[in-house]
Length: 88
Image (tube, rainbow, N blue to C red):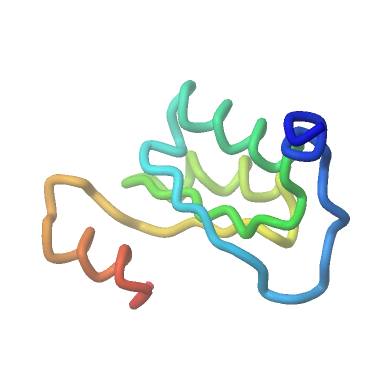
């Protein structure tokens, strides 16, 4: 029974809801991960993290209003820390 509940899609909510940052979101694996998350958990706000806004914006458009692009390069530790602490 617990397994079934864990796999059920929660109803979408107008509230802010939980946020997930997908690093490398402009790549094939990151983009696929973000897409799957949006389908499985429509209540999530999905942040597409990457270096190239032009590559990220089509995915943000596809995922809808609960997604946004965040410019972040994992090689820039201060920016990564800022994003992870919520100072987008």
